Image 1 (cartoon, rainbow, N blue to C red):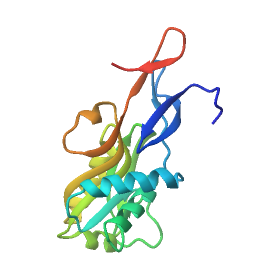
Image 2 (cartoon, rainbow, N blue to C red; image 1 turned 180 degrees about the horizontal axis):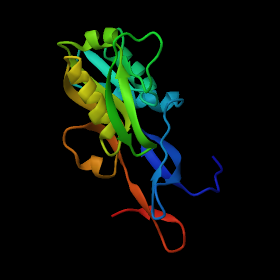
Image 3 (cartoon, rainbow, N blue to C red; image 1 turned 90 degrees about the horizontal axis):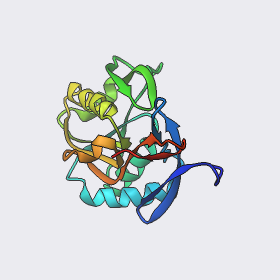
Image 4 (cartoon, helix red, strand yellow; image 1 turned 90 degrees about the vertical axis):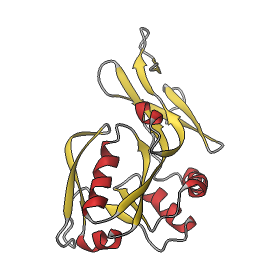
Length: 193
């Protein structure tokens, strides 16, 4: 990222990251947090989250940005695997279950899918749903509903960041708040109040 480009400076787990602004509409924007390749931040965030996550039998995340965090959390929690809800049906999937989702970072309706074999791994299990950022809660809701359809019970929702109103929720575990932004008269962005 160009250091001259306007950005939000995020401080999390003793690290600082510059996040570029992405317009939502003509007046609002979000700060783009892409953690998937940030090994340093993933390791630190997983260490902190693992201390707070209650006993669980399974971790469930949606493709793609939560995958690296789910991997590191599963390792730290002593789990042998984690489960990924896919954004499309893959050729190897048998009898997939699906749930629709509308996300702040994706236009239009999408679906998330869980293979029958992965669904069986959730049946009767205490599940923690993992994501990088919880914003509107729509992706979280869809993945939770998939877990329920598979017979799992969601006992924890964990993310590195909670964005906007999600930061006011009491049912999610997160490390830092990520504000939404509004365009100022001079064309720059300032935090929504």
